[in-house]
Length: 253
Image (tube, rainbow, N blue to C red; front, side, top):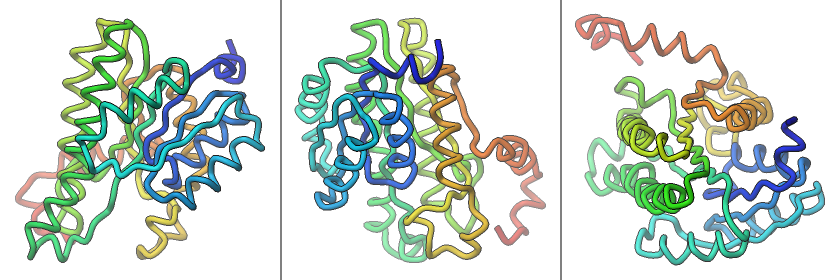
């Protein structure tokens, strides 16, 4: 079955739908005729994204404005989204923040916010979603982590540690639910050209977001477990993970 044919009846929940990667990925799904439920916290951006996806051919688009940092709201939010879709085949979790590393080094509250948004809130969502999928013996959970989680570096170790924790959680969750017919895809992008990274040095050299989205859709269709995107980040991070600590700690990364 082709990607376009397989997505016609696919019901997809997108959390963090106004992120650059999520929006680009949703454009592909819309063109394939998928049904989409979008969640994001900025009502203006969310309305624009939802309207655009309708014009691109999505079979169904509904949306909800929510702050996903509020974990107490997750059960009702997720139940509403899935009821609106009439089920769920794929959940795509794409929300997160880079945070301010320099401030986080000096202020624990700033550090805690990065960890809460990128790790704690995602664990809350995945716990509910995984149990939903296990009960039905089907479903795919696709989650954006990061290559930054593969090894702590002084330039972004708060962001990296939140993603490292998330990647470890995804590995354990996969080990638990795979035998129940549920796929867990850990997506590890390198730097991607989006609004979130626009102010970063050398951002013009970052990966094209539409190409990243195409890779994500293909990985979901193939039900793979882990995706480095672009692909060269797999061998790059293999080398970085294996640099001896006595050398690595002297590097200016």
